[in-house]
Image 1 (cartoon, protein in one colour):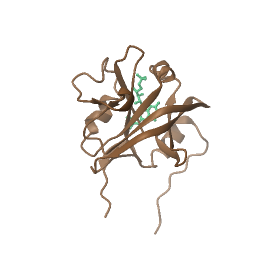
Image 2 (image 1 turned 120 degrees about the horizontal axis):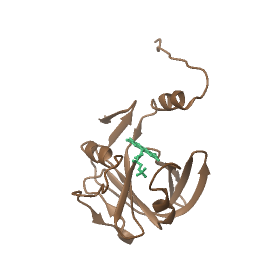
Image 3 (image 1 turned 90 degrees about the vertical axis):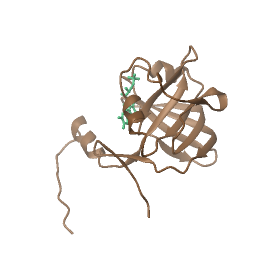
Length: 167
Ligand SMILES: Cc1cc2nc3c(=O)[nH]c(=O)nc-3n(C[C@H](O)[C@H](O)[C@H](O)COP(=O)(O)O)c2cc1C
């Protein structure tokens, strides 16, 4: 089978972003508490597994993110892996809404981290290490609890949201 190809030389940010958009990912809302104790979260698809023993996961945040100081000050974070019908939460937690949690249902998990009901799975983490990563900062967390709800996960690919059904 011949696969149509689009080749653009170089690694300009737009080219790299468009190329990486072909890598299908899940979608998470990573949550924490801000220094005032208020729930805070942002949409993240750079989430990935790292290690089983110790249990480690990672995600990365743009150095330009307004919320970077909140994450640098936080003791932990919860990874809410969104389910197929939570596309609205994906958009809400990537928006510049002043309070992304306004009108959003959540419950406190271990350490009081905000957990979003209806997520496909949740991993509650304590910060392990932070590493420089170019124009991003890589956040490593130690998983202290994980739960799965059995919902179909939300998928993000080529700038579009969809569901995934595995036979
Ligand atoms: C599907 C999707 C995935 C995203 N993944 C990331 C990510 O991994 N890291 C990141 O820094 N921003 C990511 N973003 C962008 C942030 O959610 C968005 O910039 C957010 O508004 C940042 O908030 P802040 O500037 O208020 O901190 C993603 C957005 C979307 C829609």
